[in-house]
Length: 436
Image 1 (tube, rainbow, N blue to C red):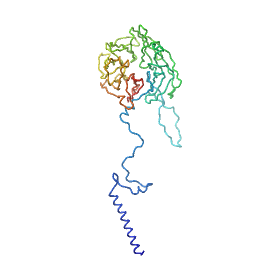
Image 2 (cartoon, rainbow, N blue to C red):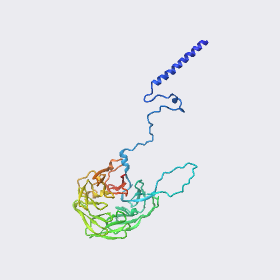
Image 3 (cartoon, rainbow, N blue to C red):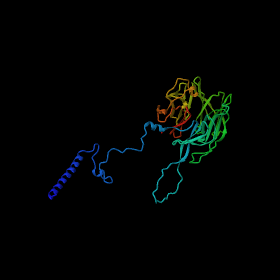
Image 4 (cartoon, one colour):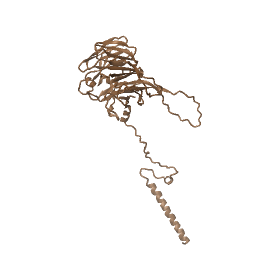
């Protein structure tokens, strides 16, 4: 090939290369990628270095599997079943535990000059409850439900249980083998070591109250009890300490059908057992002076729940109409919901009520049909503010994820009123609702 032709070939190749580079340069800049800002040539061909000047605007996909909880799930987290078995009763008390402190990771070769200190502790609300089938006691903290067995003492078929002395004693009531005689056992619970939430081979030792105790109620501080004994022709009422000792008779009546409650240190109320067919009455008994006076009555199906300050009486009648009777002024005001007083609990300063309120009420005889179990309710939990007169629904247990149909009884608040505990009458399981 001549020198002239060789030079001409090189010129042609240079022109072709310039045309190709020019085509790609102008075509790429005038045709950006849809939805993007163009292509960084250097980055696409250099995966191990360089800066990508135009990062994608689409956020990365979350592959963690986490999704924010919906409203129903948040509500469901506030309501949960506590016990894994039917219970005969429960008590709320304050229990000490070690405080959880985040662990601080120290850098290597850093000298430690701080002196060791004792671990911090805190007192938190806890609950103890008695298994209906075995009489075994279980417990858990209120803010962190972890059911732990506390005792191994077997008392079969406990019908009713309550706790005294701030959770350190227990009262269990059951029928003897003749299925007629009522036995009432008062046991002292062994002390726990701090940080030891479980106890094996714990034996509950105690004594028995007289046979055929028909009713038991605890004082507000749980240090004393009041019980009624059926003596065939009459009933006597006795106070005792939480261990069953230091007994003092303060009441005697030829009428044998009573229900008692102990709302404050100076007042025990006695309610005639209710029936839709019979007028009922409620009386006040002073445990110190033994004075016994009628509060009010002549109401069919009367059931009551006295406020902690002793000034208000929540009462219901045979159509489940719920009202408040002012003991000082004798005035009556409607609460605005229909339920039974034993499905409610007073707040500590007597200004708020929490109630388990039926969504539907059948046309039957109350409270007889409900006591016999021929009627069961599907309840919602309501809060009633007596200062404002507002009644508001907190939760419908059956509507939330993991919820069940509830017929709530034995409602009780912890001392801080952060947790509401109750028993489902349908199966006797213990539940908790966080209020805050």
